[in-house]
Length: 143
Image 1 (tube, rainbow, N blue to C red):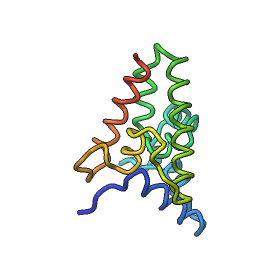
Image 2: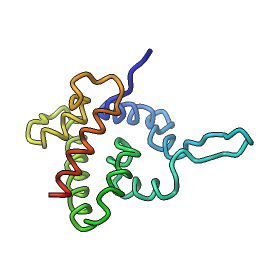
Image 3: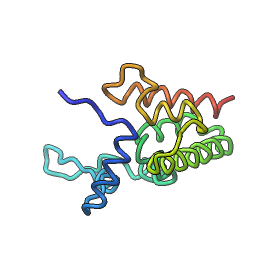
Image 4: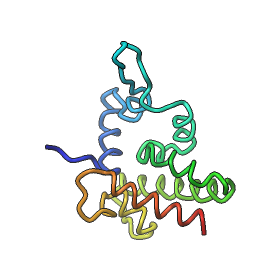
């Protein structure tokens, strides 16, 4: 049995696949299922895709959890947007630093731990790691 990729691994896999002409990021956006009637059904609803596309890295790495957080905090749209834009910028800078083999010590420790797959001390599947980040972001938005 294989484990899920950490967000960091997803970034590096996407970089490698993109160089070879097959973006993981684009593949996930176009992911469809075929139902029992033979109909093609998008994995992500248009509404989820819209929210995920607003935040390039969070949308790619955090997926459905970003949408769930978006809905859960809809009564605080300005704070939500500010927090998520700040986290998006932090994540973009963190990814750039990581790709360039720079220290990640100056970044938010919770974001770094999630990115490395270490928020969940027993990382095997990404759900709990993502859930912990979702809780962290929810608290930042709701306080």
